[in-house]
Length: 307
Image (spheres, rainbow, N blue to C red):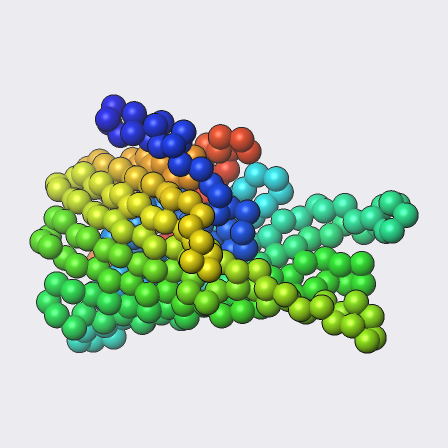
């Protein structure tokens, strides 16, 4: 634990967040409380409630139906929700549908003279369709199609940006304890904006998502789980930044979980409870708290069902 803490502190000074100001930054907030508490370091993660979020290859070996509900209470009046459904496609694949909605409220509107108007809000939505297959015994591959929508308040109502992006992933099961994975995210992803200036002039422009290239591992032994990944971010072949993420989970008495993680200059901690119902249904209740270096504290809760 001391080694992990030292590494995390050093990385917080070495690694910046030059990619955070670009479009689509909400996607990096994480999908659920367990994942966030593990530092979102789940490129090679298995046994996930919504595996396609981190790597579409992760759904290839799905054997149970999975449903996830999650909500994040973020700083600066922000919030984010996730809904994921994952289904097995025997004998060698899986299928997943997901929605992520992020928004900010209590924006005080003002007119051109500076007088207060109505209170405004803005939101982003991502709808995802994912497939994964296992062509060989230890190899998993997968792909995700993401439909993107962004709504911003405007003087005359709102303006909307939309687009389509893709994720491609691969995961290799070296053995029951160790996995390696690589994923490329946000290929072609961008908001296409069209803003009508007047009857004769329409302005169009693009906000591109940074492409992410992530490589990571998962190691699990007895009640201990260690995950980590490292990635680079770039736009139009221009390098932006790098990122390091790490997470640790320890199972207590099999049904209780303690977690800690680091990502994007944030530290996260969490707890979880697994319940078995009717001998076939497993329910997971999780909570995470995120300590942001500047913004303060954020919270995440989630509920997942496997059956």
